[in-house]
Amino acid sequence: MANTVIKNSNPIVQQRIQKFGRFLSGMVMPNIGAFIAWGLITALFIPTGWLPNENLSALVGPMIINLLPLLIGYTGGKMVAGTRGGVIGAIATMGVIVGADIPMFIGAMIMGPIGGYVIKKFDELVEEKIPTGFEMLINNFSAGILGMVLALVAYLGIGPVVAGLSNALGAGVEAIVSAGLLPVSSIFIEPAKILFLNNAINHGVLSPLGIEQAAEVGKSIFFLLETNPGPGLGILLAYWVFSKGMIKQSAPGAIIIHFLGGIHEIYFPYVLMQPILLLAVIAGGASGVLTFSILGAGLVATPSPGSIFALIAMAPKGGLLPVLAGVVISTVVTFFVAAPFIKKTANKVEEDQFEEAKKKMIDLKGKKSSVVKTTVSKIIVACDAGMGSSAMGASKLRSKIKNAGLTIQVKNTAIEDIPSDADIVITHEKLTQRAEEVAPNAWHISIDDFVSTSAYDMLVKQLLSHPSSSVTHEEEINENTILKRENIKVGLASVPKEEAIKMVGQLLVNSGYVEKEYIDAMLKREEELTTYIGSGTAIPHGISDAKKNIHKTGIAIMQFPDGIEFGDEKGYLIIGIAGVGNEHLLILSNLAEVLDDQERLKELWTTKDIDFLYKQFTKQ
Image (cartoon, rainbow, N blue to C red; front, side):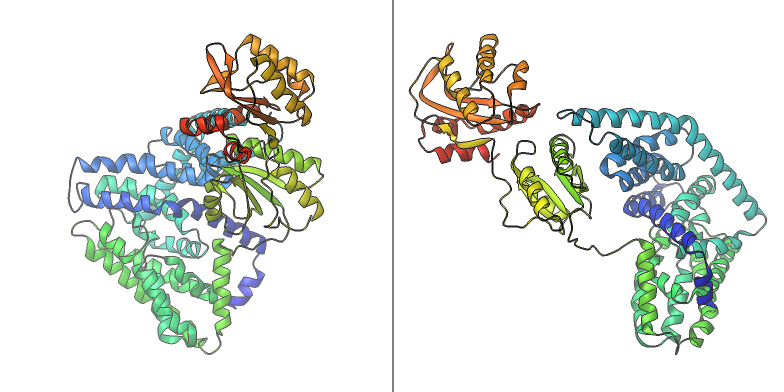
């Protein structure tokens, strides 16, 4: 009979409910620590708490009104669109917080994912349309503008609507309470828990109602409706007593995890194994609620997780026995209702059914083992913030991938937001170790420059030659082509600065970086404004109109140990630069880091070791 129910149910509806439940649960679970902190502060310091303190109890309101909804909104947005989505989700959630005078958990569960969805769609819309060098500007301003709009919409529209729905729901629940029908709620709550809607029900619906009631009378029964560990304990005890084999042996451990640790999910597969046991948990839940109602039980805050220790901690002074009585009654009722079903099937339920039930639970929860792919479908370019340098690198690589006719997704993220399904991760050599910790199953490529690197060309070539495989470890993909060893000249005799500029410009021409006309543009730039930057270094480059004469980014270095006159200063290193687009800005930044060490700089002025010079300018 139980199996028939499962087979005849609509699988599409089941999947959607399960997915919805996983998503709502995912918004709450990472923030359980914050709920515990708020609950402990509430239990200890409010007027009816264990250690009443008017000063410290001032934390209770701001945490429940602002902190917890913001965390939920941020998490919801991050689940949809990473850290960027989390930020927009939090901004949007602030709109519903300010737009209502009740804790906006439901509003946060709405606006957080909406914020993530909006920014995700915007990023997809402009993914390949942002000019190189403008990525950070557009990323920041788009987030700010969209966040502002969503916050206003939430404040003016969503907040009042959610507040109205919450008030209506509260009035409905109050009517149920007044009619003495609150135990009936277990018909909905207990099965919903098995579908992993437990956190959504508890923190999205019951907690706001409980907070409002606790503010008036110092405690609330709503905090006990979903968190009562009695039904789960009754199920596990019945399996321990009446089942056989591995299932019987697993029950004691599950009891400890569930009852003492507060992880209710541990008993869900035991119910899924025999869905008829839903009747037992409903009966146990309803009897517990009835006991709570008769004895006037309640808690001062949400016990999270639903451990017996959490219930004891959140019980008001003098109100512990009614709470424990309800837990005991629900445990006993569940045990006796479940016992005949478990006893009847003790010899029929095979261990593989239990394993199947556990797998079903894992699928419901959305936890699937990662699989290393043999084909490349997603490449991530990652940096610390996930905006500036990685965005430019991803834009460049995406263009090369597209021009090569490959259908591989290329995105940029912060290191911490590298997706688990990334096949290849490209990071700066200083960040690779962190990236490997975040995405251990991906293939990692280290580069020394996000924009001016030959790694992208070499990667595309290998993908074209081996379209169904990832990059081999031995492939040297970070070879520098911007600065070649043959373009470093040392020990040169001093000449006038114009002649030095022509010499370094000719090196750029000979290497195919620029056309010959670029040399004239370098001289014109020097006439308009000196390219001497201090520290014995000059960086001749063309005026902006000369970019049309640049084929690709390149650098040439000439060393003049006796110096070149630049007004009152002497330049010992003349570094010619040709930058495509705004790439030269990043090159200048790298050079500034290399030239920051005065002692090393003086060595660069006199060394005859070209390899030493090369390494100093290419390792950053």
